[in-house]
Amino acid sequence: KKYYIYILKCKDGSYYTGVTNNLKKRFLEHQSGGIEEVTPISKRPVELVFQEECRLADHAIQREKQIKGWSRIKKEALINRDYEKLPELSKNR
Image (cartoon, rainbow, N blue to C red; front, side, top):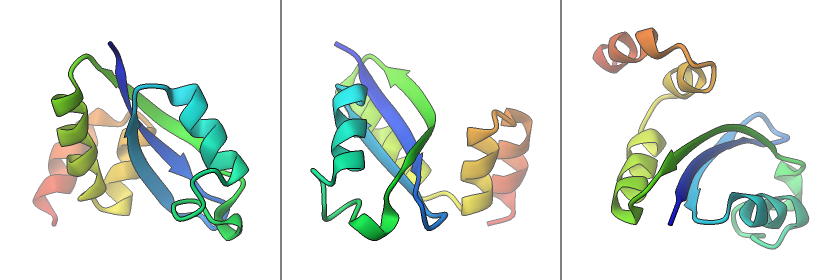
């Protein structure tokens, strides 16, 4: 089974990081308000800006928690695939 860590960019410019085993379904839930407590109407529409695949649920959950703890700048480096910036951005926190 595959699991996905994903980052959404919300209408208000904020980022939401989540994990799921069905990315298409989860994205549609965010867009439609099916997950109202996470993506209220003020944050919609959302845009999928990053996804990463994992084979194990535990690893996916661990990675989601890691990314959620990152600064906005570090998340943007990940979104932009600027992997070489990630270690330096970790030092600055």
